[in-house]
Length: 425
Image (cartoon, rainbow, N blue to C red; front, side):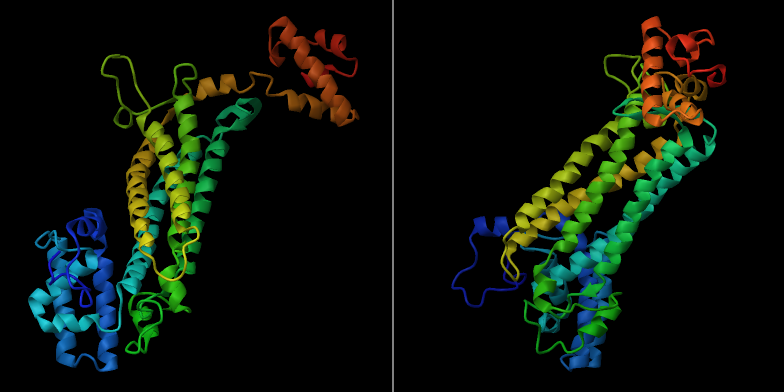
């Protein structure tokens, strides 16, 4: 690890061992937080100017250099090297290479603890908005399918057994409702974490940073965090984000499971578009619901990420501990997974073709109209308890003769129970 990039070391007689350096260095994917880190540096430079640490010329030089660094990193002209322990050291190396000692003045009054807390908060609020947009695309696809099928009757299920006829559009909108609640959760999440940790420094605040509220406003927060220790030590923002993401995965996997079943040859209720399905390397006839299956499988990964992170957080004393660095691993995997799932899932749903006639034919099968028989009896002044028993006898009568309710005749009814009349049919 190069001395120029290292943010600590004065009290040590030697540098870190190679093994420690390898262990400490952030994986390449962690450097995606450069935008958030630079945004925090801009706001911190403003605070140092207010505090008199930077004069106007120094402030201007730092801000303009941060702008060019961001552009260079975004364009791939600057990339991390082996000596860059994390995104903070990477960007400080670039700043000092361009500004010399002036670049080092930006470190006054801040710590990597409040920097990383701020980076995480800014990033997750941005990701919540981006994932919400992808979730809306899925919900829109479901709503559009539902609008096409407001008159399409299908069997409804409980316990995966035929229950009662329902409208396909209504069934699909049940899935849309669960995703709508996920969208609302992201909105709640954004409001709950609308507080800036910048200015908390390591844990006890800073004698240099006097107006963290102004830095908060510059960064798009409504206020500064109320407690400096909590702002650098807590990661409930990560846990909540992971939970919302896992719930999205669970909700999508329920529809994914139905698509897998409905598109099977045994059901053939829905056809997948060629561009959203795959084939087999050995069986030419196959048309596989890979998007639905991958969504179903990846939802397990999302659940594992939130439970694993909660185990990491358990019993961790205040304030900051290096264990917290593990949050990025599960966060980035979760975000990357959802960013892959959502557009593919939206496209799959939008292009589904339902077999309306087959659904209609299946709707009454499996005695799904049995509840209507009981309700008819209630209308004939039979108690529901008795109606339930009589209807059960009707179902048994039909099963013994190998037909469904539609096979009943007027002559059959009094044989089952005298309270059954022609009006039932």
